[in-house]
Amino acid sequence: GAADAGTGLSALVGRRGVAATALRPGGQVEIDGHRYEAKVEVGAIDRGSAVVVTGCSDFALTVEKAKT
Image (cartoon, rainbow, N blue to C red):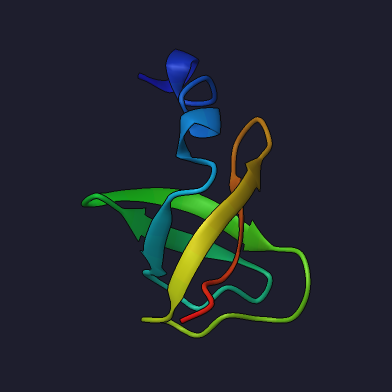
């Protein structure tokens, strides 16, 4: 539920996913079939790009474009 939404996000740090929407700088990513609010610190990430989770805040993941 909403009360525990923030507590599990830290477990996703280091995980890879896909940008479900463009992140400019905010949007959504999909990891293991689940969608999460996310933001990119620098620049923008196009929809469909591979991302890696670098951190999290109370309500969103911080991601960067995954290096191939």
